[in-house]
Length: 137
Image (tube, rainbow, N blue to C red):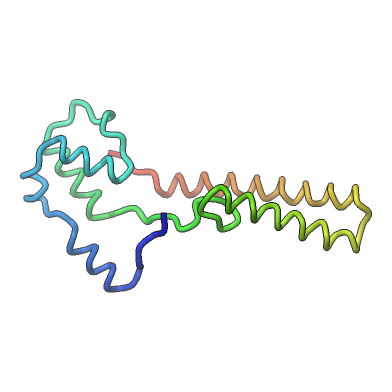
């Protein structure tokens, strides 16, 4: 799931792969819906749209592709096992460091509060990301 290169050459190659309106008009409706499905849209939701309108919307979406999120999970993780391992490591480090400052039950309470704050922050970050990425046809 690693994203591709992001340099100027990669961006120029992406520009060259964008279809023109004429190329999109030559495709069938099922091919257009397949393009939208690959971009993360639900093609079954596209009912009652004429081909010309579908071509226009597909063209607009091809010209403005959505940026892929490098770290879709909290703690700069890109998969659930990595997230769990990083959370366990962070909890262990916080418990170890806190053991020099406070007694165990206060230390555990502080670590739990830290993770609760992290969860609340991550909910807000995910909502903001979802709002920014929301695409409407």
